[in-house]
Image (tube, rainbow, N blue to C red; front, side):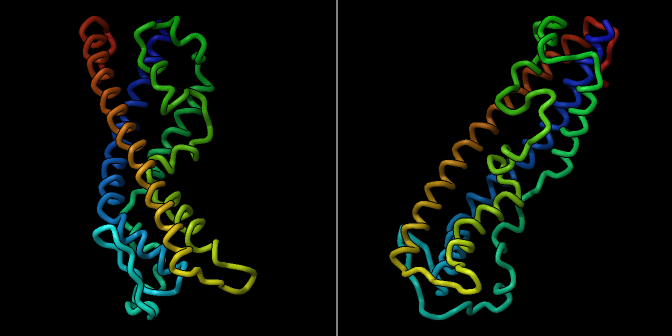
Length: 219
């Protein structure tokens, strides 16, 4: 009975964390969808040193540099409204430590309660896992997107202490590749959003059932 209580409490904590993650994910998806052309424009500016305009499927350049001076020192301007989710991932890390100190193990969770949702969340969360960095790009966390931008558009033109700008043709290939990559990540993010919402509904249903027939109250 004590292990069931531990399992139930862990599920409740996971649900609360994932609710917050899903809310932040919705925000980040909206930002990427809304700002995608401008992210790519800024990337093209970094690659070529020219102003770039993307509209109606066209990529056009003007041979002048950074006419908006206030943007010059803000490389990641278009990513500023993304949520980092540091608090949520810190909570998951803390929960992992609790899991490792508990009487639970992944192999016996199913035996404690075969209806547990924790065993069905492997696509996003595996109890006891310590490194969540691999998920941050899929969630469009701010720091991961800044690294993505830097890798594709900034580091690629730096050779020692010099910058070697791309031609417009070279930059266009990078921009199209980056656009396809963002579309792919958006598709994954939409799928994850649906997955987490489905998990939340099933977990709430489970909690109501347990609350009805058990002395453990989730409130």
